[in-house]
Amino acid sequence: MHLDFETAVLNVLLLWILTSPHEFAHAWMATKLGDDTPRLQGRLTLNPLAHVDWMGTAILPFLTSLLTGGFLGWGRPVLTNNSKLKGGRNGLALVALAGPASNVVMAVLLALIARLTIHLAPALAEFAASGVELSLYLAIFNLLPVPPLDGSKLLLAARVPIVVYQEIARFGMMAMIILVSFYGVGRWMAEWSSAGAQAIFRALG
Image (tube, rainbow, N blue to C red):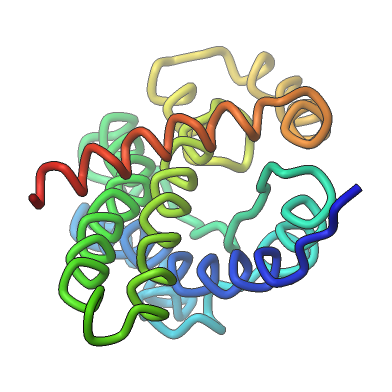
């Protein structure tokens, strides 16, 4: 087995960079929809330390990147009070989608940085290009309908019975770790994110 420590470390560093705007986007959208819970809990910030989950933002992404060729990671979830959100469950869906949407925006920004620095600072350009793929990977990963990922909130917005949601929450994350780590799901998502990154670079010329 080839252990690529450099890639694993770079993936964790990129995850830290990408987690802050992702979680901030959740907090910002919830605040715009009338819920002050994220602001009161100090989540309406781009400070990475406000959003880090040591297992999900450091240990697990490092190990999965190093050992399996997939990638599994997340930030500390932003808590919301659904009763305060304008639009009810539709508002909850908007809050959930804000995070993955921020990853797509970050992918475009990183692609621009890569294009602009490819001759001036090739190492930075390569790092930014890697971030494009990882950012899209995180967008796809977070849309999976497994608590506490963003896609699970879409299940609630779609009126999935709370009993069903709770059963998914009990076993879903462990099943997802197994699927991503040992059954190729992580590699499939990596292939999709690579295709998306190529499309972004083509669009930028």
